[in-house]
Amino acid sequence: MGFELLPLTKQKLKMEKWIVRSLFLVTTFLFIPVFLIFAVLFIKGAPALTLNFIFSNPLQGMTAGGIFPAIVGTFWLVFLSLLFSCPLGVVAAIYLNEYARDNLFTRIINLAIINLAGVPSIVYSLFGLGAFVLFFNLGTSILSASLTLAVMNLPIIITSTREALLAIPRSFREACWNVGASRWQTLWYVVLPNAIPGILTGVIFSVGRAAGETAAILFTGVAFYLPFLPESVFDQSMALSMHLYTISTQVVGVPESFTYGTALVLILLVLLVNTASILIRSYFRSHRKW
Amino acid sequence: MSPATTFPVKLKEKIRIERLRVSYGDNQVIKGLDLTVYKNEILAIIGPAQSGKSTLLKCINRMSDFIPELKVEGDIILDGKSIFDVKDSTIIRRRIGMVSPLPVGLPLSIRDNVTFAPRVAGCKNKLIQEEIMEDCLRKAALWDEVKDRLDALATKLSGGQQQRLTIARALSHFPEVLCLDEFSIAIDPVTTMRIEEVLKKLKDELTIILVTNVNHQARRLANRTAMMLEGELLEVGETEKLFSGHGDHDKTREYIEGLFG
Image (cartoon, rainbow over all chains, first blue to last red; front, side, top):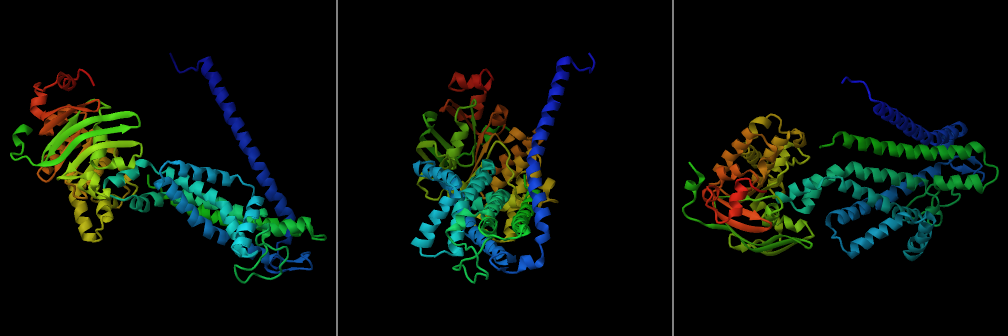
C-alpha cells in the first residue's frame, strides 16, 4: 500500500474544497453591502466635509451652514448614556452571574432582560417620555434622552458582560475559593481583569446603537433645529441621527451633499469610537493570561 | 521503616465526621458516614470511582456551599466545633488546604499565585509575602525551577509544575489540615516521590487527608487507610493491616488486589 488516494477519499477532498469555496463566497457577499454603503457615502458626502461644515451652526432653516450642534449633541448623548448603562449593566451582570441563585425571581429577571432586548426603540422613546420627561420631571432634555438610550442599551451590556464572565473557567474560581478568598475577592483579583475584553465588546455595540438611534430620542430630548450648543444636561440638543432624518425628509432645499455628509460624519464618529474600543480590547487580548 | 511504626503514640482528634449524608438532587452520593481523622496523621482514602471520596473532601472545606444542588446532612467537627456553625466559610477554607486533581495555575504571575492567599487574608507586608512564597514553593519542590522567573505567568507552566504550584498555594495559608485529591495524576514519578517525601515531613506540622487511586501511594504514606465504596465507609484501619490482606471486608482486599474498581 502506498500513499495513492482512494477514489472515495478523492471525492471527499473535492467536496471539502467546494464547501470552503462556497463559505468564502457567502462571506464576501456579506462584505459587499458594507463596502457599497461606505463608497456611496464617501463619494456623495466627501465634498461637503469642510471644516466649516463640521464646526459651524446650521443656517437658513438647515439648508446652509454646518452640523456642529448635532455632533456635540450626539457626543453628549453617547457619553451620558454609557455613563449610566455601563456601571448598571456590569453590576447587574455580576450579580446575576456570580451571586444570584437559580430561583423564580432570577428567572423572571432573565426573561425581562431577554424581552427588553427585543422591544422596538420607539417604545423605549414612549417609555422615556412617560418616565423621565414627565414622571421624574426632567423635561425634554439631554438627560432624559440619555437615560432612555441607557435603558435601551442595558440588555446588550448585561448580556455581553455575562458572556464574558461565563468564559472564565469555573476552575479558576474554585482555586481561589479553596485558598479562602471570598466571592468578591475572587471576582476582583481574577475574574474581572480577565473579563474586560468581553465587557468592552458590549460597550462597543452600545456606542454604535446610541449614536445611531433616532426613535428613542425623538420624544425625549432632541430638537429639530437648535442653532446653538447645549449648556447643561437639562437643555435640549440636536443629534446627528435626528438631524439626518430631518434634513432628508422634512426640509426642502437641502443640498444632497449635506445629507450624505451628515451620514458620513455619523458613521466616521461611530467608527472612531469603535476603533478606540477595539484597540483597547486587543491590548487586553494580547495580554491574555491562559 | 513502614509508616505504621511512625504512628503518633498519643492520638488527638482533629476532624470528626458524623452521620454525613450528601446528595445531588435525588442521587445520594454519601450515605451516612462516620470517620475520625487524628492530628498529625496521614489518612488515605481509597475506593473505586464514584464512591464519594472527592465529595467528602468538598464537604470538609465547605466548598459544598458553592454547589447549590448539593444537600449536606450530618456534621463535621473540626477541633471540637462544627464547621457548619461558622458563619464566614472562608475561615474554614483557610484552615483546610485543598489540592484538586487537575492542576490550576491562576492567570496571575507565579509570585501572585502563591501570595494570593496571604493577600486575601489581609497580609500587606511584601517581605512576609515573599518569605511565605519561597517557603511554600520549596516545600512543593518547585522553587529551583521557578526562582528565576517568578513574574512569569503561572498558566504557562507545564502541567506537573502547575500541580506543584497548586500544592504551594494550598500551603500558603498555613492550613492545619491538608487534603489532596489524587495529586499525582498530572506529575511524573520522580516529582511524585519528591512530593511524597515532603508530605511525610509535613505530617509533623499538620494533618493530611490523601484521596488516591494509586494504592501503593496509600501504602507508602498513610498511617491509616479508609476504604470507601458507593458512598459508604467500608472500613478504616491501619494501612498495613488493610494492605496485608487482614482487612475486615473481602471487598477491601479485592479492591486492593485490583479485582474490581
